[in-house]
Length: 456
Image (cartoon, rainbow, N blue to C red; front, side, top):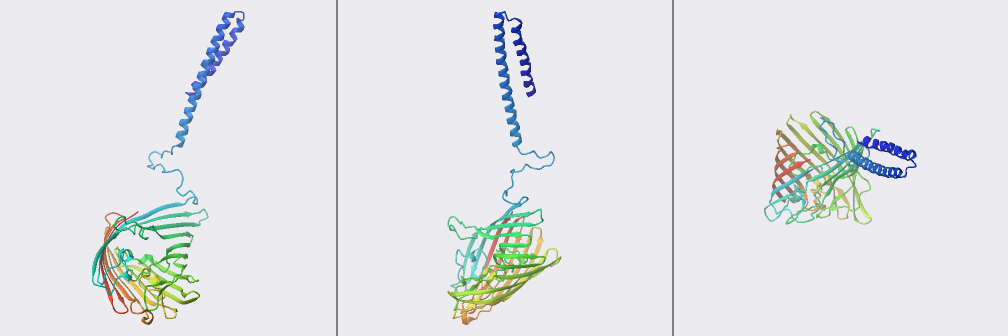
């Protein structure tokens, strides 16, 4: 169409030129000259109109081509590929080729609890999951109560890159909602987001906050309760610098000392941390039958009851853990730990402390041991069950601690988990737990814990 319009001005220009030559042949004829001049003016007006129409057409064609260029390219026929959601990467500030992923879970927990010696205080962690150190002892008789929450719902973000040099970079941030209450259970049930993990990786190095190297996450039990064998499990997240080479992993981790005050009472978290980080080394052997892992911990304990008058001691511990496959659908999981000054690494630091304090303010590392064993049975692709027992005992010096501190805790758990479709789990767990003080006074907990979880 454009070529046709462009040809018309050439024809008209030729006609105009011929018309302009006519007055030279009949110059003397005045009337004829006026007639020709009128025809030339008419032809010039027609040319201007055609030129204007051509310009409008070319502008419209240009706009159409620009709009077509702005549209995403259509997927090749038959490939089934969808057009991209956006033209640019979701991580424009990252290295080229960075892969960004997001995931998490929505989890609902509901439970009914009976305690034999009073109730667990509302709003505390012991009402949300099994915390052996929270079992009431020596109280005013049994009590039964129920709780429900979604605090363990979770959201995480990952970024990973392999550079042209072959170097590997990664990062992870993970949140849950186990923070302090921002509302109340009578109306809003709102809770603050909590930082669980935040770390970067560079080849074999890791720097940031994640599970302690003293903890074997691959030996954790498949529980409905948030932790499960809390009485005995090594369970710590903290800042650290870690290096992995094959089966060996070595880390230096944030130091912290928890202290049992002289004469008893609530634990004290030392305000003045040791200048020496906790050091952990782990070796893991993997095979077709499962894995076994051995870790050692060395640390300095430090307590300063009065400014300028600090007391220190050495803590050390070891843990052996693993998973043994007993068949295609059965496995055994276990962990045994022991040492002096390892209290805060065991059971979410809710059972015992790292050290005891004498009357002069000097500390002595507290010794103890902890262990669990569990059997996991997969009955079908949709149904599995777990049975496990956990226990820990501690060597308190009652001359320093008094008789009101915990001597031992243990628990028995049995659960069934149903997964009607992948990534969707419904579970129920029966829990019995007992806490005993140095005085011999004890208390029991009986709980039915239910859970619904969708992971994405």
